[in-house]
Image 1 (cartoon, rainbow, N blue to C red):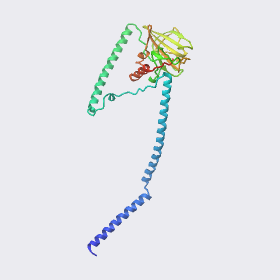
Image 2 (tube, helix red, strand yellow):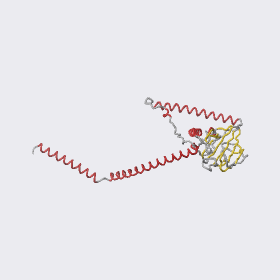
Image 3 (cartoon, rainbow, N blue to C red):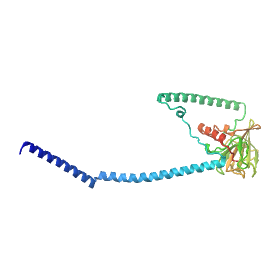
Image 4 (spheres, rainbow, N blue to C red):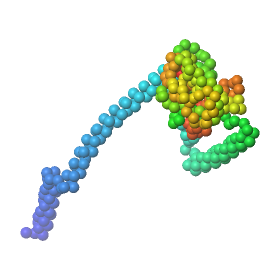
Length: 298
C-alpha cells in the first residue's frame, strides 16, 4: 500500500468519524435534554403562556381605560356642557423646534438659566407676600380668605367660576357669581378664614342652604348649596371651622359647593384666593378649568 493510499484512507476514516459524531450529537440533542435545558424549556413555555395572558390583559385594560375616558367625558359634557379638557403639561423642549444644530449643552444651559430666573422670581414673590401680610396685620386689617373651603380637593373638581355661564336648567347664559367645587354629598365644608357668621339661610330653592361669614376689611365669603348646617349666626369662627356639609338643590346638576368671595359690594373670583392651598401646577390647572368651563352647575 502506497503512502498516498494510507493518507487517503486515514482522511476518509477521520471525515467519517467526525460526521458520525456530529450526527450522533444531533440525534442525542434532539432526543435527549439535559436538566438545564429542560428547565429552560419549561421556563420558555411558562413565559410564552404568561405573555399571551398579559397581552390579553393589556388589551382588556386598554378597553376599560378607553371606556372610562368616554364615560368621564360624557359626565363632564353633561355637567359643564363642554368636552373634558386635556391638561397635559408641555415641556420646555416641546416649545423649541426640532433642530440637529441645537446641542445637549444648549438645552442644559437654557434650562439652568430659566430655572435660576424662576427661583429668583419665586423668592421675590414670597418676600412681597410676607411684607404685604406683615403690613396688613400691623395695621389691624383682616387677611383675605385664602384657604380652600374643602379639604383634599383635586384640581379636576374645579367647575365654572364667576362670569356669564350656561345655566344647566334654562340653558341660557346667566351671571354666575361664584366658583363650583365638585364634591361628594356630605363632604365637610370649612371656613376659609377667621370671621363672624353674619347670616345662615335655610332654603330648598336657588342656592339652597347658605352660610355667610364677615372676615373684616370688606371681605365676605358665602358657602352655598349646603346639606347639613352647623354654623350659628353671630358666632365667631376660626379658619378651618366646620360650617356644614356639601348638599344639592333641585336646580343643581350634581352635589357641589358653590363658593363666593365678596369685597364690599363686588363679587370677586374665588379662584384668585386659593393659590396658597394648592401647588402652583394645580393652581394653574384650576385657573384654566374655572375659565374654560362653559356651564355652571347651579
